[in-house]
Length: 267
Length: 267
DNA sequence: CGACTGATTGAGTTGTATCAAGGACAGTGG
DNA sequence: CCACTGTCCTTGATACAACTCAATCAGTCG
Image 1 (cartoon, protein in one colour):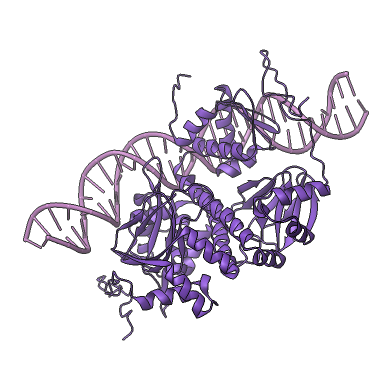
Image 2: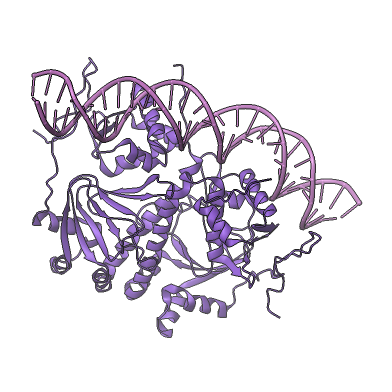
């Protein structure tokens, strides 16, 4: 049987099966996984076994239970991390106490002491959303690796640059757009990252996403997000449970994100 | 006399001198400038004369009159630019037609085809705010340079990473904050980039900044920005004219940005 | 089977965009 | 040198989206 045995399908009665794999990720990070990640990570693709081996030796594996904080904003930043397993949330708490979520990272992504030039402190708080595993490499070691392998440096640069562009795009829409637009955008982005598409077009988001998290992603409040989600649930656009979210009508969400709100709003 | 002969000082009568240097930047980019930029640009610092020379040969100089568009969002992106002289505005137009300003670039900064991995199109529109001059290098050539000089690659990476961090920070405050907060933040950031501090603590922003531009930076509307600026003018926090802006009370602005709005609001 | 955390829904308030009209300024032409 | 004209800024009135506060309603977990 494939691991994903449940679908976000609801029975006619309204009762619905919980479409989550019953897998609680193991809170440990076996060697094979580690090596696999290193090989798979876009950064190191194309490197010789040997080179990967040497890089690997400079990295430390750490495992984190769900909910655990890897580091907090303001902590001294000396190391870089690569997600090996799980989901890591990068968030910030504004002066007002509102939590904003900068990103949700999936295996292969780099984070940590990125802005090595400026502040030697973390600007974000990193939290494991599920049981996760990270590879940690000291900043200086990483620099050495990059110096040894300019090709890797280029790839890392490409990645970071791409993220910068995306971030800039985000900034653009952030305030101009309405809350529904922002929520739709956040969901679609998550879909691209952690979504698992099923035959019927449904996309399962494999992240435990609280309303507060979503609110953080969409720069809104849990209440507002809840309203939007409720409406969309009624309209069959999305469905969600305690720790899963399903996108039933991607096209409609894309329309919402673009602001083409189809308002057959007869209700 | 020093070039900056005028101050944002106003005579008692309310008449005020225009504190702008009467310098219209030359719309040409002489060789010395070019070489100077290349040497000064953080990226290439520490390189041998020889290496700079070789890099220089791969670059093309272009000059732009004020208001000219370097490229538009959606145009094919094949080259990178470094600002040599002037000010370049990176903006985006949202679906609704609102203009958002991602950044205002000053000499030494890199822009253009950054996200080489993803979209091969420009995500932003680049406009010269004043007469400007740019160095242009083909994307592939740049990659070669980086491969030849891993140290440069690292510096570029640092820069881009720093900008990413900053962008993420922006995203955080963008929607949570109020318009005055966002305007204050935008002004302070500009101050750090293009501000010229005077003895009395006043900071002159050497950019022609329309209300629309500021609105774009602060993710707001020209009207709202105007209201905020008017209020601050009355309170002696800022002063501005057609093509200049002065920050008279930096501390107060920082308080505004932080949300500690001192509301002696007796008026 | 109760207690708790998180989600939902409701009602009231406010900031800000929007629409619209007037005012200041710079550049142009007489 | 002065009026003219376009552009930008300013200011007012109005509407609405979204936040806030607060109460209820699940869904989990012990």
